[in-house]
Image: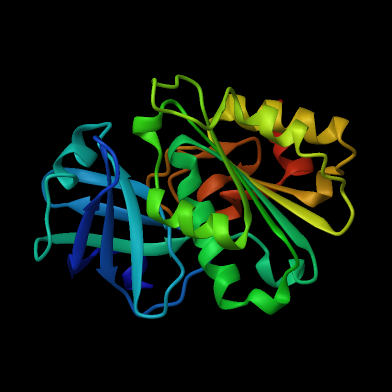
Length: 263
């Protein structure tokens, strides 16, 4: 019980800069975790923030941290061998074990692709359990694309497409919102499960596109954005309706997410 509330000191193994403002932190970690869960990351006298796990490994975890606030700006200054503090993992997770035998469709936007990366790593470790994997990622510009090296590798093994809103003169890929990729894919809903993570407006329109394509709400799982404070369902800061996102979520079946969106 103590570890739920008391952060553990961790020495950073490696820091990789992904974009101008986003960094992957690799940390030693021997507790189990699943795709979709999050950690509470802190620095003494600075503060604490919830960060999605973006990996699936036995002896380490990776966190994608973006420099967007007072705490994350300090975290993004850290380098290998520096220390930070962790609590977790918290929250529920994508029901990977219940989805065996299905093809998986992963749809993400911006930094919302982080927990979807952990799904890909999970699938790679359990490849025989799933059929095809379809990856649709959207970013603001080519300069904001995350996990570039992984994307090139995934393209060799999975059906992967990336789009940007604002291309530059060198960009030769898709242009426009990620819903266009989904709608033009020609996918049907047979033996498929969909995982979505990204800005709320993206989730809304992707959900509507999937409905027009014949997907049922119970085939779709979304990660809800909410600023979690305690991580254990005590403070109520992340409550939507009668649900605590940090404890009942952050992963919700789309039918449940629609009810919460309307509250």
